[in-house]
Length: 215
Image (cartoon, rainbow, N blue to C red; front, side, top):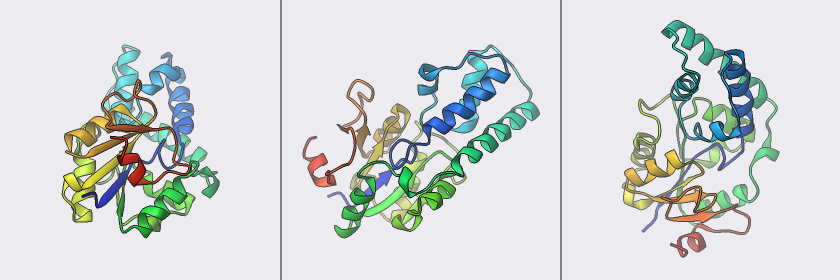
């Protein structure tokens, strides 16, 4: 029996992917490394540190630790500048209603995100209190596809992994959910997220029960 629903943040509750793209592209361009939307897809669900490593690898560039830290801080500062303009209107269509129906049905809710800015974003969206548990990049050692973020979220909710479903829009997140022993609902298509258990395009007029019936 499903007792908990764990949400990824970016691309599920809200769309900050555009902000990540802008910030990473500006950084990569400054280093002379090509960066486009196709490459950006590889960074979905990946931690900031690992994302930088992938960008440097793509440019065959080796940097020392202090320079990497400087670049990570620059990227985050730029990203936060863009995030500052967010509001409740940035919650994705149908998501607020979906969360409300879960609460009314007694389903526990958590956020499991690799982002270190998850709480700040949720505060901007004014939905922080809608979740019993928030686990972000500040609380974990391993980023997705490692299952740590979802396992920690389930533990804090007081639930077994088998009692949880995860809603994810990234392949790394879907893999993390499956490794954790949880049902994975993919936000996207079967082609983009082949390992998910079922798929949705958005949450307008959807409930968890009717989505799970599609598995």
